[in-house]
Image (cartoon, rainbow, N blue to C red; front, side, top):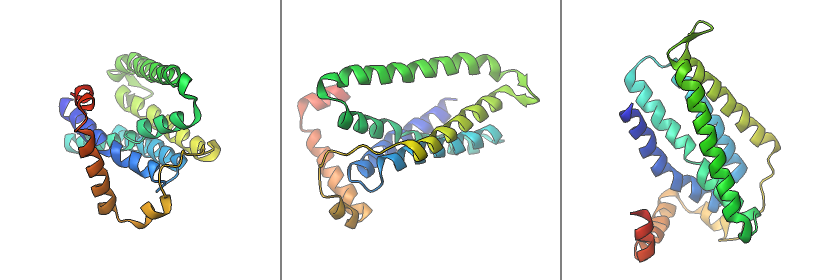
Length: 190
């Protein structure tokens, strides 16, 4: 279990900045990124329900982390763009509360179900199927109904689209190095 969690967390931590960069530079719309993340997460979760080997499960959990990685930076960017500054703390608090409440409720429901057979299926597999289907549905609804709110102009998105992936990565790496020169940033992350 620890190996699977590590694989998911490692890829999630490394993929989140890439998703954030794609959103900030308008390489994809934020709606598209959220839809890709939800649908991708759902499909990988459905695949996890059918997995037969430990190595396949590790790979799928890592892919799961990659898909989940887009949700936080992109949703936080949307909140920053549409919520007035004086209300952001409250909105972020409500979002985090909702996330943690959902995780808690899912654990309370899935854990007892995991060791049982439900409708002829191992309970843990059914739990993965239910979560996967819900995620695909949410991703489809995002893709159909979500309006991409206007983004605060940060840079010329046409110039960033013309740059190659490696050039964008180098630009972002230089920015990251500058953050490490700020003492309070180091205190926060350490």
